[in-house]
Image 1 (cartoon, rainbow, N blue to C red):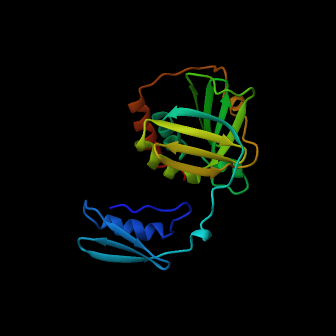
Image 2: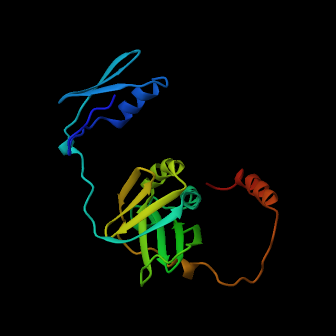
Image 3: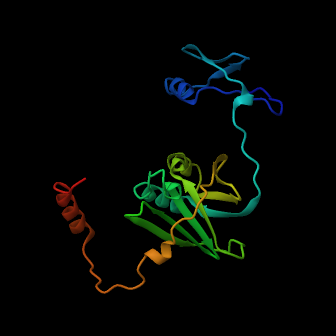
Length: 220
């Protein structure tokens, strides 16, 4: 059964503890009883109690001025984020490189990640204009990668809301809000060569096998 709650009601528990408890259940319903000190989870195998923390201690989602919104396919976001995890930097001296950069320009959205030694960049053309008059770039921290990937299976589309200080990714009924990283990101287009002296086309499998053999003696 489901009880009604008043506006502002809620409770806080340790997510790792709650996850461990729920994983131990089979596919069955559970009843939650909440008081000021404990969260009792009742199921057919018994009762589990978890400590409850003050809801007021939980950080509120910061208010932010919305700049624009857009919707992208979950498959595109998934490909970008999965790839970018191997390209971002962990250097605290370059905080902007600790995440990924999204640049919005007309109908085009460019996604990029770099650690100053290797670079990933891809451009997706949206079906309609985003509705902004100037090019806008945002940088999102790499800590968003795994939570965002876990949400993408909930829906085929991701609604993205860009604010002045935060960005929100909404997939189905779930929302992921994060602060933007301040600082200038490298001009990706100026880094990528526009022309090349030599173009070589090789089978992917052959190149991959060669790289794997090289890694055996490579330094680092």
